[in-house]
Length: 396
Image 1 (tube, rainbow, N blue to C red):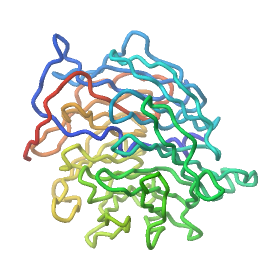
Image 2: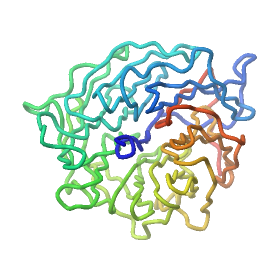
Image 3: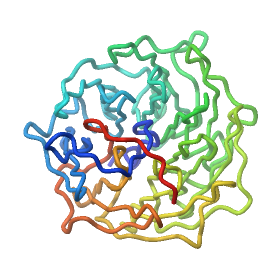
Image 4: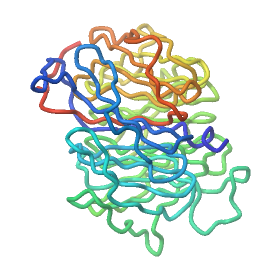
């Protein structure tokens, strides 16, 4: 199934927001976030409200919505919370949805990516550029899933209305080359750098990270030393909110690899890594305070929790927790309004698992058993805040 190769993609940067731990109700409503869940089999996007008191999920009345294409595998929300962008793998489309104040989705524009089989999407913190990764570069019909070739990252300028402009030119090309089988992309907060994880590397057979600096016009320039080694079969990546550290999961070796990010885009591998995970990690995120890392493991059906050493970025093995979720998690997300709840999309069980985050330890406990129903092989998660919530810095 194509999805299993290209659909285990998460958004390393769903929304560039701080973390609020003071609970503030929105008028008489306890809704703090809207959660968007793509389903690859049903070709739709389900929308849930997130309750501030329990973290429970409730579908909004008109949910789900058509994804506007076949096999949606990735999504991202704009930093202002007004737009959702959904990647449809099988027909090479990127669909812009307007988000209503009630969480409802309104299709706006559909774009065809230059290459084929798009797999991942990210947006910069300023909300001015959107980055889409195509599995294969344009005009290479010889490349197939069994005979992969080099991929591409496409840079779209974002207008004030949320629509996308013409892809940023790379000489005569409409894309920037990356290695084989790209599966994830991250625009680092606070830095003008972009990283793309490639499963097959650049002729090495192992995984690699393509690293770029981002120009003011969206032009990408390869960082010195790019591509960087990234284990055997890297599957996802995420950076911390300060833009100092990058984390990459290796699904073949069951490991989490961590790097220090330089302003030039150069990556420095931390000497104390990599860190062990459960079986087949395929999604990773960092909580909005930058204190904890959460790794979802597809085969194990678990989420690992790690504390972050604030000076080195190293995941702490002494504070590692493993929490059970449903089978086949493909994405993991910390809700952005309060940062108190964690969710995974579970591909094999057609559910979303909800977990409560302990801000003192980072540990997780399930908020509901059984998990929330989300039919159609859930593939990706994104969220926006709802209403006004105080943004506070809470010490661990």
